[in-house]
Image (cartoon, rainbow, N blue to C red; front, top):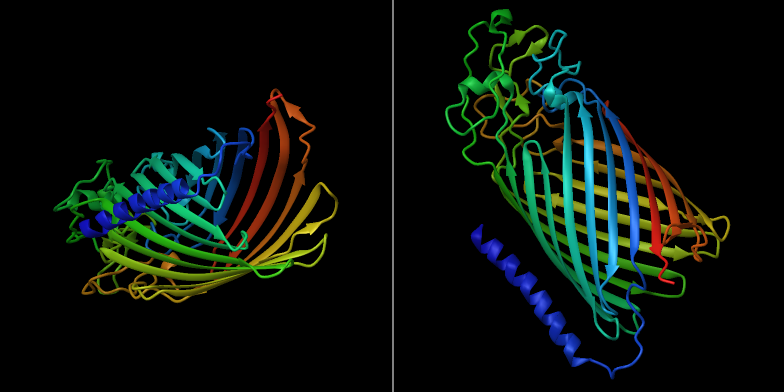
Length: 444
């Protein structure tokens, strides 16, 4: 995939060069220019997420999927001059997962069980992310280009990202065309289920915690032929195209096309798989893995989407969205959503929403103990299964266009509160509460 990486770099370089050349060709005479961003803005964001279900991928398609996550984020947008803006984004995600705690189900104080969380160290983790985006607008504000760098890290996974975008507005700003390109270079630490670590014949694995082999039942001659992965690298390359059009005073529509190519380790090293043609081995109530998830080393994805926004009157607006997705793993999906903002006063707006999603199963998916050991690829991750889901949402926004309320040198611009309920036609469901507070620096 070296050629793909080189192509992505050339695209990003070309976007920047083209935008700079176009900007120089249309420079206007010196004089007053309205700034793209008048003053520094600070967004304080946060969310609390919880989920539950009975099809944990860590324990081969059965077991608890309980997870809670709290994610505080701060985004600072700084105007560097009339045309340029620097945006810094930093976030921390702190989660506790019953599922991932069962990477080693034997390090707790209770009998090992896929439907119970282990109390060991693997039950919690912290994900950290920092990104920076630099954007430049032309003098006539019809062309905008940006570049972005991002770094994220957690216990067993790290990622470095590079991206760029270019937007062109024309037809008196009624039409917009955009292109964006991104690449991510990720790295897994090869962390396998605890019972497989002493059977690794290649690759590396962290941790040598003790397994209570004296408690084994069922097939007591547990001796899997396990081969570790040779490399934990994963690369992702994406290209997105967008087109939007204001069709009338009330109607706006847009189309998007997204292409993604991935290569490297696309399997998750600690997700177990159980074979129908292998005798079962247990320690306490936990079934020992026959192998880990194994998926192809490449994946290609295509998504086509469309949005329609219609302004009924000063109170009601409708926002509709549809997307069709297809990949070469056998998954195809449909997404449809609608949001109807209701402006009840000059300062308060309500946001009821609904989203429907369904997908086909990946070619390599099968539930617990329905794979055969003779297969080349296999997974029991229900995110790759056939399913339908519904998501219901409600939000409220408070906006103070005059920023009358102040905190030190910053005026309060808006407050957003949202709740989403997600239900899948299996046992899986989740809830998420999120908030956002925007401050604008008062430069008086």
